[in-house]
Length: 69
Ligand SMILES: [Zn+2]
Image: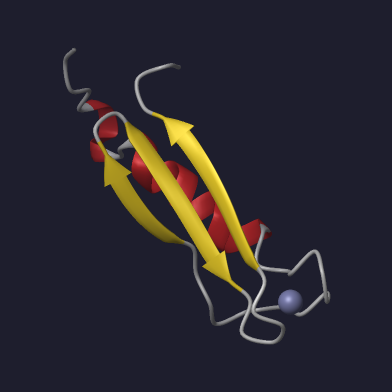
């Protein structure tokens, strides 16, 4: 396991910016949480993202593994 330093952008940051641009609309109530963001928790080689819809309270979760690219 070695840390990649190409360009100074981690997989963590790439995933996060992708979410913030494209996936803040609640699939349940269609609320567009334009000011919201996915919260990230890192555990070992995984990142878990959580988004709480401020309108209906629906929680989405996504888990990604690092180093699998
Ligand atoms: Zn919602």
